[in-house]
Length: 556
Image 1 (cartoon, helix red, strand yellow):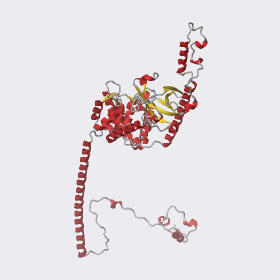
Image 2 (cartoon, rainbow, N blue to C red):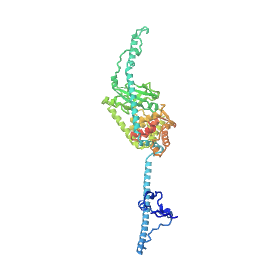
Image 3 (tube, one colour):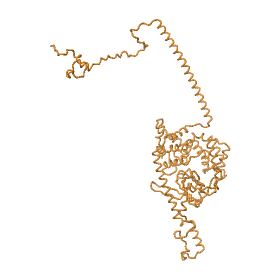
Image 4 (cartoon, helix red, strand yellow):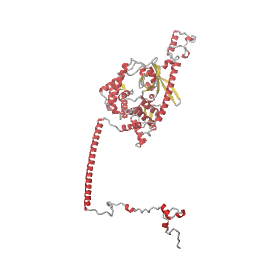
């Protein structure tokens, strides 16, 4: 049956619904004309012929429109000439490019040969080139590239300053107690006075003798002596920190605090000891008295205020102090190094002294001689400092058959030749005259090594001691390699952070170079630990860079 809609012609379904998914326009009141004007349908997109994308080995041909006129003979000739010229120019360009490349390669080879030849000449000029151990030791310099965390450094520094001030205050209070409250009863003059009285007025029966003639104890006397001190007299003092110069780790890490009193030019030194976390004790180490230098240019001269400064050495005869530990009594002379001093008190009490002008000039000349020798050897040791410094120490120790730390002139000359350390004959003779001041023909080889190679300043050495004290928690003076491996942390090494090396590789490199400095393969003494960082310090100019090398892996 034919159906007919008024106003709309019948059409197939495909034509009545050209845009699918839309509502019927008739239901919305649209006419066919208005709907077409408002919503025009998009043209149909032709299908993509993927067959034309197939790869072809044939040479591409230019697609030209079909309605162009055929080229004339004139243009065909020009086109042929153009193609010929382009091919010729391309051949010439390729030839020139090949010749240029060949010339560049030859030039680079010549430059490389010259550089290699120069490197060979430089290597031959250097007596001992860098070894694998030197390169592994230089890996420790990488920690200097990573600055220590400022916040953590500030926090630790503040805590250390507070602890140091508390320690100094405790020691100062103990000194006042010892020399004020006990001054009268401990004065030797009281015993002498009592003995004189007993000798002059002795009776046959001491039990029947009057009380004034009996032997009295110090607590029963009321004698006033001439050496009675007052707080005002003891207040005129200079306080300083010191350490023992020793290869014994237990003695080298003792915390010593000294006082020099200007009223009588006397000095005393106390030891601050800590037992556990809460218990501390302050014990006299060097009794209060007037002392003289026992070594060097000032030997035999009394200590004065000008002798106290950071880096100065104080020498004492061990036999004069019976209470010293047995390990210290093994040496005839006890040497203490001042590591810190109360500059304010020193400057306020210091006066000009003419007596020591000649000695000061001699000491200044001595330092110039040492510096001249060290400057000559500095470049040779900058990258080989660890191996040379530790190796020289081990070699000199092997030459010391008597184990007293002293060697003769020929031994030192032989050591310098073995390690290719070139020192002129004049410099060596000047060096020997300075070190062999007493004229006995023997010199301490630790002192000789520091004079030739140089020595870390006290700021750097304080961090070396901190690192060792953290490792040596039993206070034995030696640390096992196993404990060092456990405590050494290489996580913050730049090569570990960048991924070029692993933590184990950096740790193994450190342990290998440290073992080379040790006599025993399973433990490290304080002297060997200090020697390692002494050699590492030679190639580092800035103090903070060196401190970072210790702070970062040891966490101090």
